[in-house]
Image (cartoon, rainbow, N blue to C red; front, side, top):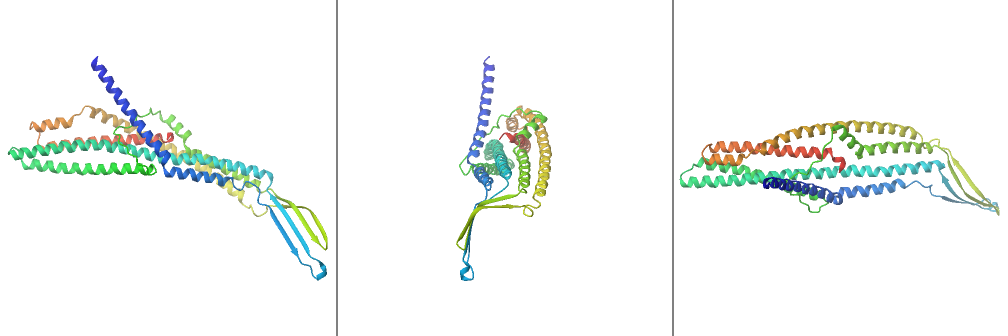
Amino acid sequence: MRKYNFIISILAFVVCINANAQSTIDNVLSEIGKNNKTIQANVQYWEAQKLQYKTGLNPSNPTAEYDFLKGSPANAGNQHDFTVAQQFDFPTAYFKKSALAKEQSAQAEFELNASRQDILLHAKKVCIELVYSNKLQLQLSQQKQNTEKLLSDFQIWLDKGEGNILDVNKAKLQLIEIKKQYQENVSAISQLNEKLTSLNGGNQIAFNDTIYPVLPVIPDFAQLETEYENADPIRKSLEQQKLITQKQLEVSRAMWLPKFEAGYHYQGILGQTYNGIHTGISIPLLENKNTIKLQKTKLLYDDLNLQNHRNENYYEIKQLYYKYSNLKITLQEYQTVFASLNNVTLLNKALSLGQISTIEYFLEMNYYTTALSNYYQTEKEFYEAEAELYKYQL
C-alpha cells in the first residue's frame, strides 16, 4: 500500500511539473505578445491603414471662382463673375466606396493575426530549443563531473604507482572535449535567452525549464487539417482580399456613371446683375479607361492565389503531420530504451573492477552520450513539429 501511494505521489509530482512547464511557456508567449515591438508596430500600421481607407469617402472640396473682366473702350463697363460650386459622384458610388473601406478595414485583423502567429511560433521554438539546451547542459554537467572524478582517481593511482600515464592522458583529452561542448552549450543558452529578450521588446526574460509542455491530443490528419484551415489567418486574408477586389470592381463600375456639379453663379455687367443656379455634368469617357478590366484581372489573380495557398497549405500540413507521426514512433522507442538504461553507473563499476579498459570505457561512454544526445535532438524536433501543427492556436 505504501509503495502504491509513493508511485501515485511521484506521478502527481511529474504532472505538476509538466503543468508548470506548460504554464511557463504560455507566460513567456503572453509577455512577448504584449511587448514585442514588431507586433506593436503592426498594430499601429493597420490602425493608420484603417484611417487611410476612410479617406476619400466624402465629396470633393467645393470650389469658388471669381473673374474680373475690364471692359474696353472705357465706357464698355467691367464684368464681374463669381461662382461657388460643389461636385458630386453618382450617389451609388459613395455606397460602394464605403462598403470597400469596410472590407479593407476587416482585412487588418487577419494580417495582424498572421504576423502575430509567426512571431509567437518563433518564440515558442526558441523556448523548445532552450528546453533541449538546458537538458543537454545537465547531461554535459554530469559528464564533466564524472570525467573530472575519473581524472582525479587516475592521477591518485598514478601518484601511488598503481596507474599509468596513458589513462591520465585519455581522461584529460576526454575532459577537454566535454568542457568544449559544455561551454558551447552555455553560449547557446545565453544566445537563446537573449533572443527571447529581443522578442520581448528588450525586456529581460529567461527560460530555464528542462521539461517540455504537456502535449495536446493530436487528432487524425483530416480533422487537424480542417481545424487548421478554418483558423488560418492567411487563408482568411486572401479570401478577404478577393472580396476587396470584388468591391473595387463595383466601385470602378460606379465611377463610370456621370458626375454632377451644382452651385451658385453671380454675374455683374454694365450696371446689371444676374445670379442663379450653376449646374454641370461630367461624362467619364477617358479618365476611368481600363479600370474595370484591371479589377477583373486582379480578381482572377486573387482567386488563383487563394487556390494556390490552400493547395500548398494542405501538403505542408500533411508533411508536418507525417513528420510528427514518425518522430513520435522514434521518440517512444528512445524513451523505452533509456527508461531501463543505467550505463554510466554500470560503466563506472566495470572500470573500477577492471572488467573493461580505459579506452573501452570512454568508447562505450561516448556511444552512450551520443545516443542520449540523439534522443534529446529527436525529442526537440518532435515538439517543434507539434508547435508548427498548432501554430493556428497561438
